[in-house]
Length: 260
Image (cartoon, rainbow, N blue to C red; front, side, top):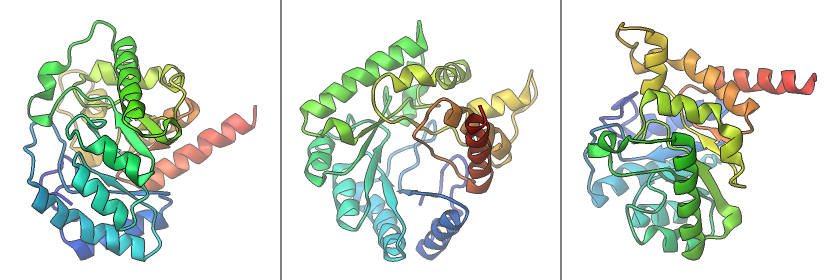
């Protein structure tokens, strides 16, 4: 629900169009529809609370009214609380509760699952924070620290889902390393969400050498490949823009595993 998302900004900005699109995603195989009103693409500026609520709540209500399981993608406690009151069943916070000190208490009170993503700062300056000696070790350590803080804040440990934060304060090589080491992320003891869909690192892979990366909406086959790898690596879920290709890829991955 933003005009400036890196992939499909503006396409679903109208409430009616967004609800219709969400129902279409479910028809293609989505188990959960993620609704957000604030772009987190690199360099994106924040919107105010009133505008975020205006964008998000009618879509959450519309989808819930159609029987859809909805998650809310927000860094604001007020948006999370109102979306849950409207029927959302999961809070997906790319800051892991760091952007708003009221988020963890709000999620604890709501008693819903909470996605804790690896995050080093807001979109406007996150690329300057993409400095690692060993990205897998450091992301694991920072996620573990954040999980502990969230539990201390009152969220039940069994409600936590972890997300390595692909593309957030990461260069392409960092993202690829994290995808390659999903079993280590699973060792945190919580379900793992992988959100690679259409992201810049896939464009870099597809471009090869010095060629210009293909636009975001031409990266769905690459996304499906990561989804199959994620399924093989034991991910709990993948967050994607185009559902059908990923659903097919995950079915094939599961069928191969079942044939062993």
